[in-house]
Image (tube, rainbow, N blue to C red; front, side, top):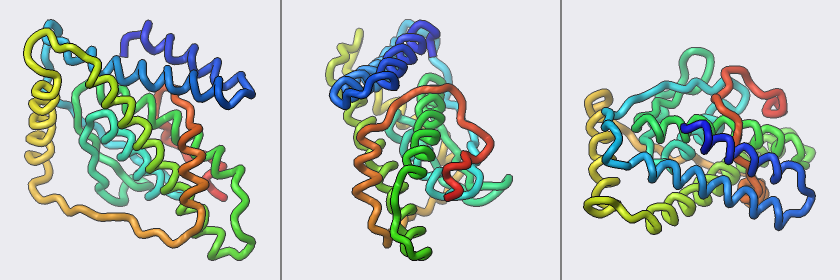
Length: 232
């Protein structure tokens, strides 16, 4: 990501973190999200050298490794990457992410921040006292957080796409072409893909979704170590 753009995002997020006013905080976060989306659209500039799709594997350690992997996958998908949950390995759950360089970078920046926010948000929850119900609550909270973050990021992406005027051809066609390239890269590596849907039984989904709506964006690398808050 261009350093100037990243610095603007960081300043917006710093303002969001300092204010106690929820309306101001939401405004700053929306601006940061929109700026990230605009950066992704600007990377479509045909004047810049076109690169082939790349990929990276991210390993999310326990606890809650599967739920953290889902968050990383949804964030990547929201910013036009193609994530695949490839199961356990290297001490955690792994996500293989395919995409163009600018989108991989955006996914990295966003996922890093949102993993930290998810950890701190989970630590503030008040689940039921009974152990099995508490674990189900926390898991459903994590799923709600991830789903709501995905929805908000996709809204920002769609707005940026609608407002962009392509120098030549339509933005939709350019994006479709890039998606096709990414899918070819995925198919070359994984010719057989199985789709799964997470099962949920807890009562924390709506609380997690509400926390997702308040999520901030920022920081700059997906951490290798587990956040202690997610151990609860």
